[in-house]
Image (cartoon, rainbow, N blue to C red; front, side, top):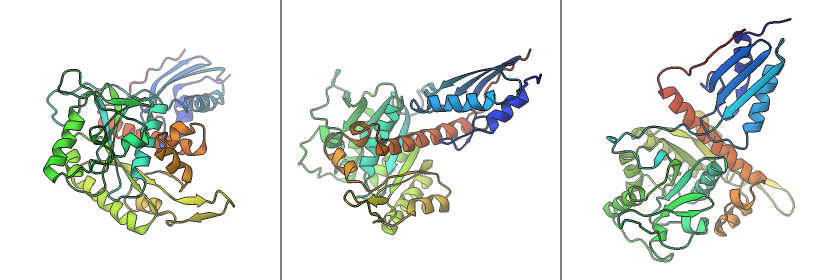
Length: 364
């Protein structure tokens, strides 16, 4: 009878590539422990990103890979997906109280569906098991109240800090909660940056894994304020395949590079359109632009989204796609993007930590 040993188990684990990480579990530092006791193998996996809906698939994939080894009779696989807590640094002026990771969603161009993408990204992260908040940083055109169906004014328990408004499990803050929907924000740049900092730091965020920030179009005061004064864990760039949108998306990429904010990847929005009457498919805004941008600048294509009337209708109704049709194909597309974004961030943070994960081996 073949005796199971560590090298066999590691080889089997190294042969399985986790699609969101784009790497095998050992190379990604996701194996917490390997225990071998005769014909029994027990493995602990920590993804480090939210993936409530994929835990079962991952567990079965790992179990199948290990069960196929000669000599293995029993396999146990434990999977953790929760975000690892980090100790707050009281001397870090760029940290945001109550927030572990700030993710900026940017396009540098209006009209590409950035806000809709940001809202569904936040909802998808929450659906996968994370504690998520959302900040509407588009102070001139706040859309978060309408998209999330939230009305009312934020309250304060101490007269100093806002309580975030809640819906669909998200903690939210927007200038749209403080002014009437049709009232214009006629502010100069200095007023905008001060208001952004107040909304960000004077909101009592409660133990968030991620704060998704919906950035305004452009590369001006708001973008620079966030990038320079806040510890942004990573940015997501939203574009359409159209050349005009891609040019602005590249400008946004270059801005983040100059201020030292890592770009986690690109989302291509409004790609393939399928006629709801006849089924004819057409790339109205072009084809493959997001992929070409990702390849040219060494980025990850986090996902592609179609031009679909349901996405617009659901956002306008105050019930975005991920909550309006959680089991539909469009919601799953947003969840794939959310998992890929969080996985990319987890890998960056893991590679920045010193030391390798501790693996305990017991053989009998």
